[in-house]
Image (cartoon, rainbow, N blue to C red; front, top):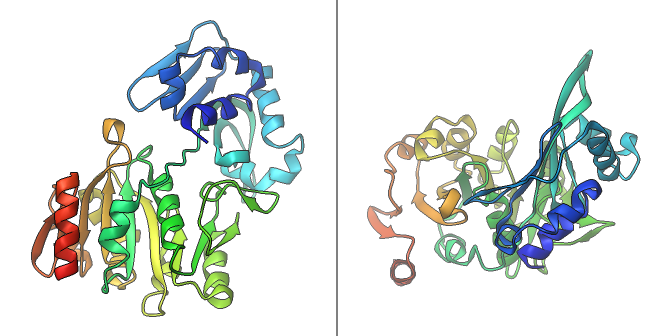
Amino acid sequence: MDERVRFYDAAGMLPPFEEALRCVPARIAEGACEIRLRTGRPVVVETPAERHICRETLVGAEDIRKCMKLFCDYSLYSRERELSDGRITLRGGHRAGFTGTAVIRGDTLTLRDVSSVNLRIASERRGIAEKLLSLTAFEHDLKGLMLLGAPLSAKTTMLRDYARLVSGFAKTTIIDENGEIAAMYNGCPQNDIGLNCDVLDMFPKEEGIMRAVRLLSPEFLVCDEVGGEYRKLADCAGKGVKLILSAHCGDIREAACNAAVRTLVSSGAVNYLALLGSGSEIGKVKGLWRVGNAEDIGGCGHGSDLYRCGSRILVGSEKAVRAAARDAVGA
C-alpha cells in the first residue's frame, strides 16, 4: 500500500471530513503523517515538511463524537483499556490519540468531552532497515539494538522493517502492545512482518516478554516504545535472545540520561544504539554506535559513527555504507 493510499484509508476513518481530505494536494497526501482535529478549528494535515490547513472545514463536538464511535466500532466498552490510555490503534495500524477532560475514579482515569484527535497515519516502507540490518544483525557480538529518535522519526516503521528482514533467517517475536507494528486485524497482520515471525498483539510488554521467552523461543525479540518495563527486558541479557527495541530520545545526549537506555546497556541486553533523524531527515540513520557500558553513551559524539573495537566506520551515504560492509566482513 503506497503512502497516498494509506492517507485516503486514514481519511475514511473520519467520515465528517473525508471529502475535504480527499481534495488535499497530492504532495500532501503522499507525505502526510498526521491528521489533526481540534474542536472549533479547521482540520490540519501535517507532513514532515509542511502543514496544510483545510480551511473549508470546521470541527464540531458532534463530529469528534462520530469519529470516536467509529474508532471503537460503536462499542466504547470493547476499547476501554485503550480509551483510558488516550489512544486507539485502528485497522491498518493507524493510531488515534486524543485529549479531553479527565475523570478520575480511584486509580482509574477516563476521558469525557474529547476536544482533539491526532490520527497518526501508519507507514510501511519496505527496505528502509536494510542498511541498519547489514551493520548489526550479522555481527557476532550483537546482543541488542535500540532505535532512538524524537516523535515522528519513523522508529516504528524502521522497527517493523527490521523485524520483517530478520525473520527471514531467525525466529522473531513482536510484542505489539499498541498494535502498530503488525497491525493485526481478525488475527492476520496487515503489515508485512516476514515469514518466521510471531506476534503478541495488544499484550502489555511485561506479560508479553515472559510469554515470548517461555513459549516461543525467539532468537530476536522486538518491542516498540520501551518505558517502565525495561527491567524485564534487561533480564533477557545472557539468555540467547537478541532485543530490537525503540525509545524516545531526541539525541544521544538525551539517551545518556534515559534510565531505560542506561539500564539496558549496563545489563548487557543492548550494545548497539541507532539514532534516527526527524523532519527532513525522517527515517534516516544519523548515528550508529557500539557501546560496552552506560558511560560509553556519553562519549558517542554527535556524528554518524559506529565504534567497533576502537575503529570508526561512517554510516549514512551509500559509499560509506559499502565501506562499512567491507570493513565488517574483514573485522
